[in-house]
Every structure is written in C-alpha cells, then in structure tokens.
Length: 400
Image 1 (cartoon, rainbow, N blue to C red):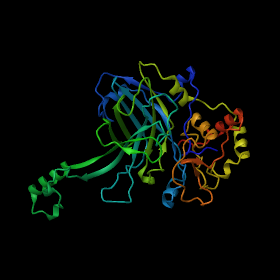
Image 2: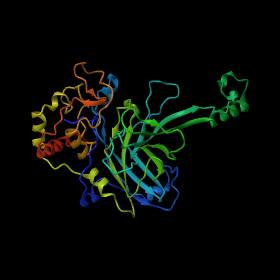
Image 3: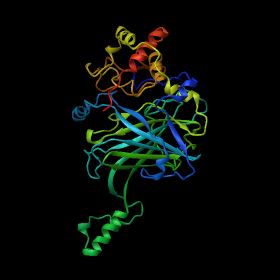
Image 4: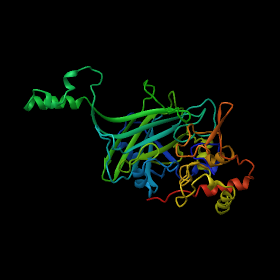
C-alpha cells in the first residue's frame, strides 16, 4: 500500500500526552566540552540510555545473490542510545551488538565494513512535516553523519613528500633506519572514515567539504560490539535545534555485506534537551500511534490490490513493481504511512527499478514532474485509512 521510498512524510497530530512517549531520548545537560567526545569518555556515565530498535531495510531486493542470502533471515536489533549537550553542542552515543569486527580493507574491493550513521532533520524557514528518512525531502533537508570502520590507509596528505610514497622493500634502509621509515609512513596514515552529507531529496545527497560542518564521529569495538559517537553543534548552517532534536539511526554489518540498501535503521527518534521545553509538534509526529484496526486494515489492503505491486510479507513472492513492505512498520511513522496512502506522488524516487518490466514503470513524467503510478487512495474513508496504517505498523521483524 505504501511506497516506502517514494512518499513524503506528512504532519502528525501533536498532543501533550505524546511528550512522554516511549523511545524518546533525554539529552542530559552538562557543562563539559563535548566537541569530539569519545565513546569511552567517562562523561557517558552521566547519560540516560534508551533502547531504540533498528529494523532491516528491505524496501528493494538487491541484485546480489550472496548478499541476499546473507540477509534473508535478518531480524531487528536493539541499540542503546544516549545524548549529552552543553547548550552549544549535542553528543549522541549509540551502542549495538555485533559479533564480528569488520573493517574495510585498504587494498580490497570485496570487503565491507561495519559502520553507523546519524541523521538530523535540517533547518527550514517554516515548520512542517519531518523529511524522508535517508535522503530528505523537497524543502525539508537532512544532515547525515556517517562513520565507517576502516583500516589504516597511507596518505601523503598533500605535502608532496615523495620520499615516503614507495614500498618499504624498495628503500635502502635496514634495522633502525627502516623502523624509523615505517613509523614516519604510519604517522601519515589515515584510519578515520568520517563523512557528513546534506540532502533535500533523492539524488541530492552531497558531501559537506567546505568545513561548514564542525561535527566529529568515531567508533570503538569491544567484545560486546560497537560504540559510536557523533558530536555536532545544535545550531549551524544546516541544523537549528531547540527543545527537541529529531534523529534517525542506521548501522551496517560488514560480515553481511552491508552497504547502501542493506542496513538496519530506525524511524525518527525524539531527543529532548533536558531543561528545555520539548517541541510538541515534532514529538507528536514521531510518537503518534496508529488508531485503526489492524485486522480490518489487512483485509482492506488486500481488497484494494496493494499486494499486486508490493511484497507485503517475507512469505510473499518478491515484486519489482514497488518497494517491499516487510519492515515498513518498523522504520516508518504513522504520519509517513498516512501520507504515502493519500498522496503517493508527494515524493517519487527518480530512476526506474531495473528489475521491473518496461510496461510497469514506477512513475510517469507529467508537465516535467514525476507522478507515481501508484493509485491515489484519497478516496478511501478516514477509518479505512487508519485501519490500513494500523496493519502496516505491524509489518516489522522480530528483535534478535
């Protein structure tokens, strides 16, 4: 029923009761400096950890048999998330279990790394619905901070020193001189893969390279899994946060060939800044619960032919005409699902599914704009829409 990657989030109904919704994270206020805080900092002992569930991303079937097999039985995983802020900087710590430490190889094209990303809703001139998770929406940008686990990679760092750019075996050095050479090369190596992006819709995700993002991210592995941190200003050229900060979380598992469309991700999570008044509109949209009857919604979904284009559950045959809905209830808000049913053309992914037949494109071009081929279901009565949304919210994997 819902096009997971083609529809715009709509504005949820805010209510005072939603301010105490489960899953909201309380950012504890501290006076300490938080710029570049490490995952092992003792400051995290002051934080309050909240469980956030991350669901397998299953919207599109990958053209990679090995990766599909490795992820066929994926379950949701819980992460422990905490936040600190000092009035200027917000720091978020994410802990998740991972039995293997997977690092991107420096000289390999077939290895995949563990990693994580935090997404923030970007600043806008006027309030409105939260943007699409992952890429943002027209007029509603997102900022994504990505951190990957990578091996040490030699970099001359632009210093034009060719003396250290040759293999150690090609030098005339031995003993201590060779050890000194190795140490010099190691000092020029980069081990940190950190990137920041800004996006306002599909195909608009752009890396921030001009220094206008003062963020810092890092990952630390232990026997229990990964702990990752991101620290960034509450207000800069991209984000203007006050009261409540909407955040979405994603993690990648390199042992399962995680990349792009293969990851676990959350829906929007509200991070409330301690001592400040929460933003009722944002918290209400994130915390809104489905009001319909899921059993009736399942019947309505079938009656309206949604399974003709969408794979609804893992037991159904894959469909290449529209995104799979297997975990849509896990990483989607009620507002997003409702908007997708009523206005399927609000956001349309550019580029056809290469696996789809040419007679079944996802959209057409009308007056220069992409128009979804999904039926506009705005003719449905309110109760039926609520029922369908309630059913869609049940579509989510069990937690491992």
